[in-house]
Image 1: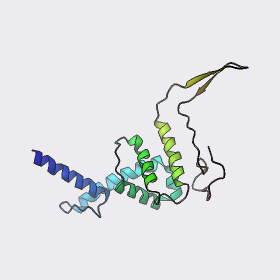
Image 2: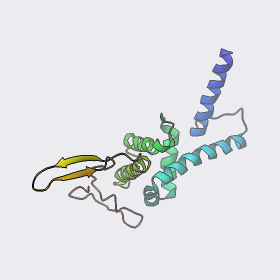
Image 3: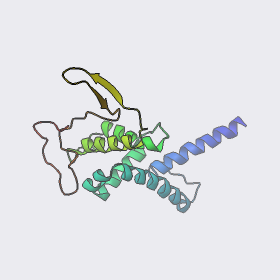
Image 4: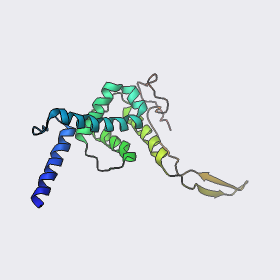
Amino acid sequence: MAELRADTQSLQRRFSAHLRAPETNPLSEFSDARLAVYRRLFFNNVYGLLASNFPVALAVVGAARWRILCRQFYAEYACHNPRFTEFAGQFLDFAAVSPLLFQQPEFLCELLHYEYVETELMFAPDPEPATLRVTGQVDAQIALSPLARLLAYRFPVHRICKNYQPEHALEQPTF
């Protein structure tokens, strides 16, 4: 029984390695036509998730380059979080450890982070706002949403789109 389990686990590892990088991990004991179905299915799921999480980045870099970035991520990065809602964060981590892939355009990593935060906040639960009592000339209660984020970027990431792509960082950060 233990031998069968080890064989099954070995096959699963080889199968997943093949799906990620078929050129370097062939599975000659299976029909390539059948394997191609799984390769497309798995990669297209990853591609679709990333495209929906980073629509502006996809539009800016173009479909061909975006596909290359997704393919590299899929082949090289070992995701340790099975939650689809946190998949964008895994891609962001990959961008941080693969700067050569993400250096053009120069603002791409910042744009990815900005879009990641949008996704993160979309899935965040609705918390109760924290209140602060302020006394002085006028007594007031100030409520700050726990969903508020103070972010600083070198590029105006909130304005970047297919038709606006800054070539140089700003002298003052954008908040």
